[in-house]
Length: 129
Image (cartoon, rainbow, N blue to C red; front, side):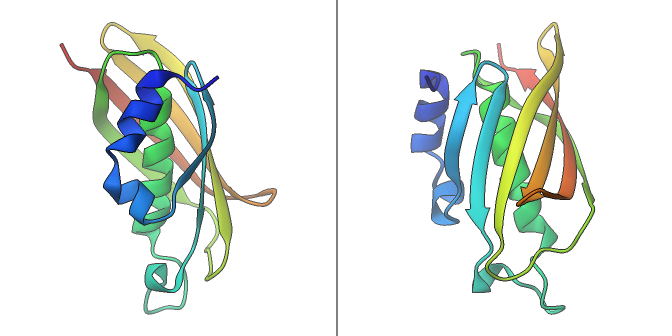
């Protein structure tokens, strides 16, 4: 069952919904999202713009770190692009909570195209008071 905190957050997330990002599954500390690379997401090198791959990973991270209920925001995030993505690619981002301490958390997100890893993201969260 998808936590209410995630469905509530996503219902107000126009950025993610406009890009076609879809929630596939979620639970405590985990989330899985998908997105298809469209024509407007391709850069001048004819590959998917890294900002869109980051946004997909960041959305999965946001769902995982907000799954516990209190509102959490990104304190930082880093991404490593492993392979280029192309027009029409369907990407899947899987977020997993690594640890929480106090009001902070660390989450890893792997972005796949099928079975191939295309990016690795690490996000740091902070729960708001």
